[in-house]
Length: 366
Ligand code: MRU
Image 1 (cartoon, helix red, strand yellow):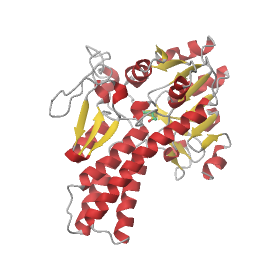
Image 2 (cartoon, rainbow, N blue to C red; image 1 turned 90 degrees about the horizontal axis):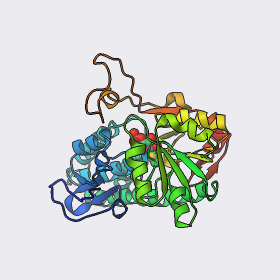
Image 3 (cartoon, rainbow, N blue to C red; image 1 turned 90 degrees about the vertical axis):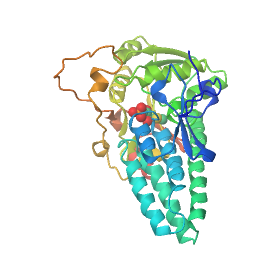
């Protein structure tokens, strides 16, 4: 496997492995957000520097960086980097441009609430610092502190989620996961994978089945890659094999991430998640959703109110194939996420603890 560290200047500086680099990082000296380009995985580990609003927007939309927490951290660092280039001598001009760039980044993907959550936090810092009488250069310092806090919290939060999650699974268990809610979707540890990584640190042997996750194959390209690179017992299956492995008794728990948790406990996650939940219910396997409380959206009453991103037809008909695999005029429906109804969820595992139904009551107390 080719592992290179390449910047947008095209310089290859040293050999790296996935474990050496954060999914999202700030390069303050060069006014850039540095991401692992996830569209190049698993073949190549390529670091890309994002400097302009357009580059950051494209990286999120094109899934160069993806996964709810990682998108949030990218947006936070992105706003700080962009703010560095805004007018410094007049707050009104600074804030006008800040709001315009904030709204632009917010339009890059609709479903993961962590994007708007992080942008709101950055916006809150600007307004609070201004009210406290800080000059624009002072506000800039506060933005950097906030963006770094969002990043550092992500690492701590994922570790806590891992602790809670690990308390629910046993040595030797088979775990099924869908899409990638791993370290590539966060800064480190991931959410759904955090119990798996912590378990490994503590000598607990888990066998993980990764759904390949059509159509963009985040399970095959990302989860199978990062888990096996970490030495975890990993088996890749096609999405339509989940029922088979569950029926064979190979799965003791399902762990998935989430992009938005509505007030009643309905959860949006990568397309196909709800089908896995239905299967888990049928086979009597616990279905756990793992995510930070920043993914909870109490303003959203239920799953029907979660905006679901629809993506281009070519992701189904052409991408990954050497030639088109569908008739030229065929109608295509390509929702990127689906909603798992709260009745199908055994527990939601957050950094604040394990939440059991009735979710509406426990979520409102968070
Ligand atoms: O379209 P993606 O790859 O951004 O979808 C990612 C997922 O659905 C993840 O499961 C979710 O964001 C949780 S990541 C910790």
